Image (cartoon, rainbow, N blue to C red; front, side, top):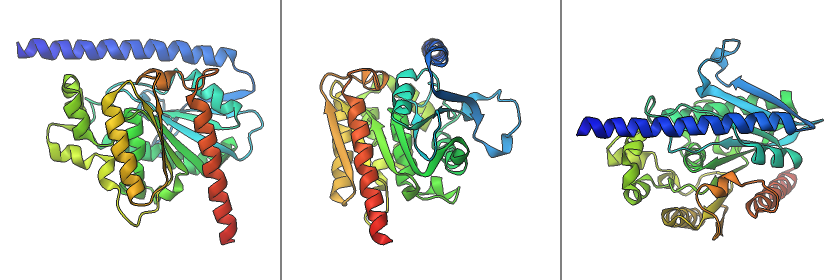
Length: 311
């Protein structure tokens, strides 16, 4: 009986990965065919030690979408979700097309997935990808001093974690303040024990990623690293009200950031669910994208006014 349950779990995972692959492949091809005035640099290996090698392992690849004549453009790094066990950097035509149309360089990254790799591999990879972008984006016309991390679900968790737990960026001689802002798209993983308790049906997926020890779940929870005296970037939290655990965790995360005086903004979307808030981002007339752009503009204006005052 146990073996049969395990086989069903693996079959379920294989099905999810297969669906994700075909969606990603078809939408990426569509994006490359239909886009004008955007140069796509696919499958760049962000591990410096692997430069020049065949990119057979897709875990450490990223795609860069560069607007035409881009010079010192702001940068968005997107981190996909998928419960830390599936997902891919491709299939993001709405987001990439919308951000590049607004003058952003848009980057989508891969990272190692469970069950082949466990925490902290996912977070280490995201930090490594950020370091690569920071050091190399000028070659593509990007501004290394204006980089935003945007993640959906598990991706939002990873963006928050490498920002609040300084050890990940410190490996690359970087600091949280090197990130201009964090955009979390309906992540309920800022406190992992709360998420795991609310969704017992996904417990085996969570175990693949973080093991079965509650102490390890706390160590991997970004909310536990919100403390006084830090220099961290602003947070924008986008919440789909169709998911109760997301509302609860995001509200607690937001309140703790506010409690310690950090810049945090939260928006709730009653007509969005966990999938549509991410998948539809950038579609014509959808409500989330304009809020993201407005927030970035306000954050950027505030930061540069503060820099001018220091000068």
